[in-house]
Image (cartoon, rainbow, N blue to C red):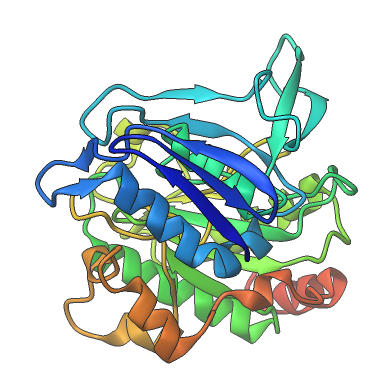
Length: 314
């Protein structure tokens, strides 16, 4: 990485691999209680870029912008028509009823990542599929949405999901959402459609719900799963996004969506706030990237479904 700077108090032009990236309002406080500034946010993503970029490259991005930090208003932006000339975009129909054409930003390199962060994107939300295989996701996701439940309950449910996936030979990895949820990923290597990914996640979720109905719900409306963990398998749809591994979240404490060893979920009192901007770099130095398997060869879906069907009824 080659970097050159022309700096004043609030604004900086950074050259990243030959691409000029303008950085603005670096002293603006984004996390008031922690005193974390926009400059600190940018510094984090610059340092973490070699680790996070494999999960972003070739993927359309949905921008969730917090121009005034975590306590200010935020807004979503899909259509990016004023990006630098060096930034890559792709024109696609949205998955909305109107199916309008929009220019999605594609995060191909550190320069584009930092351009996004300067727009106020505290968190990064990529598609599950890449530009050359848009109809085929690289992974299936089971999102455990705690909503009004505790993280301890989320952990209990995650361990049930993990056990089922292990029994059918499905590689799986887990990360914190950065809030009270957990995200469980199963690599598919773009070999299957979104509908196949959704059906697989649904079958796993239904089996989990049968095993621990007192802890889980398949209901989609929050008011119907109060006090339970929502098994959110419909997230497996084209155009849906999931916060990327190693992404910061716009929450007090500056938590990071952090990949975990499954054994870590057995630690008493584990909390999403154990993994923040303050300690994630030391953790990476000790443990490396625990999430890389989600971009690996992928499961053989037919084999996993045969094993799943051989167990208790779906």
